[in-house]
Image (tube, rainbow, N blue to C red; front, side, top):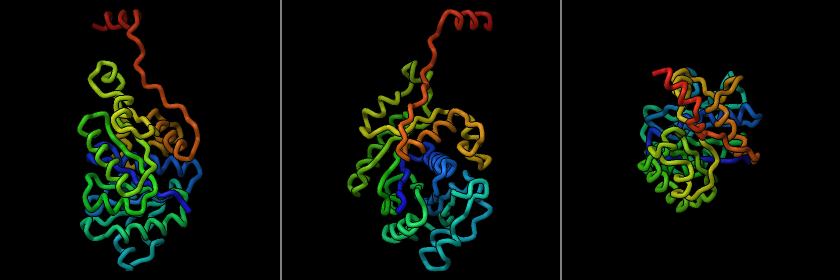
Length: 265
């Protein structure tokens, strides 16, 4: 029986779907069988980030209504055969599925895959309730902004009500220079507010945007970038490995740095 993990945020636009795509790919690269489930009915994006949008024939809704078999709806990634996508329906609303149907669906997937990663829609409405229905664990994605952290705290409370007790935190888009200048919350600040264990820190990096636009997750690359390494480290920690966190501290502003800046001005 595989692990069923929902990836949630509360606030939209914090990089939750990007994290889902990259962590799913990283787990597959590390030898696990993974299915990523897009639970954002009507507003799917996971297929785009994985570069699989042109290969969708059936969606989760057709599986639930009995119009096709589960295996027919799964889109296999040719670049990494251990990864599959179950897409959401673009033309249906979140009300097209109910929590019991979603629970049965992800339960069936867990019989065939090591990891079932569910990309939850933003907010705490019907789509969110569908996404968490069958989940045993949760990854909470937030950026170090007060609005995002407050929404993440609300989501944690909702997950606790629905008996999802095992939760871990991903702090996304951290900017070390802004943290050092006291212009951004630190990872420690976020941890203290949300009070759940940290599993990953992902820096703000232009390469994430480029890779998302190309449909090529950074965690798929042969030579990993810093954010690509961060995603792989999250996957390794999920699997139970003890992995040190990357050091994003800004080096001190020493004499030679100041001298170099003087000549550049």
